[in-house]
Image (cartoon, rainbow, N blue to C red; front, side, top):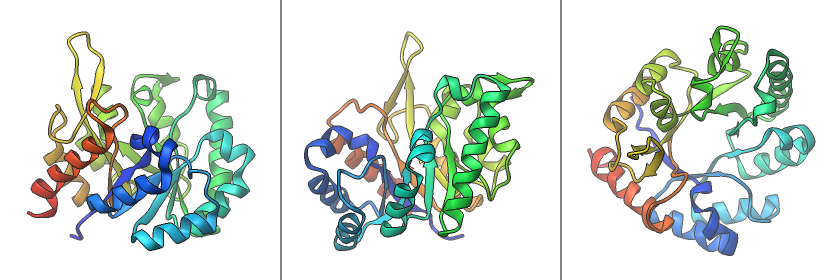
Length: 256
């Protein structure tokens, strides 16, 4: 079993990158992350970002691209992700109006399928990233998650499973990794603590309630390629948080 690679979703550092995109990428590389997943490109042109990634020896895992971008700026997203060498492009979220009926889901999936076809022509796999609502909302008698992945093929839509939000919705992320083994090239490795009033609090790896060891074992068995650290809201300075999570991974995964 090949060792999974470790990446960082740059959304975690959105405040820092807004001030110094290039400098923050340098710090991420220095922390030991092998790759990054983008949520915006810091205003850099495709060739500029490609040159910077090469200089830092960072892999462009892929990019989070909104459905609006897929609909209105698909050519630009293809150009950027081809230039930086992305293997994946991921839709990270669906607003309510794009998921709240059978017609809305049908229209959304039509956008996904066309984008997937265009990305596939360039060797890029299209994926969908979940939150908790995919496991709490239904279309007909089926969970929204099952509508999205059940009405498409693995080639059309692969899964970037966010284990934190599966857990928060009341499901077992390990069971979903096992169920969709071979269709999950990426996971968001994220820890979670539930507050006294029932709200989700994203925390550094090892500081929450997700059984990360079981998730990592299941992901390895399911041939996941990348474990991507993401913390939606950091409880400490974000660069400190992603450093803490990397230290946990070194202790519990990389150096085992």
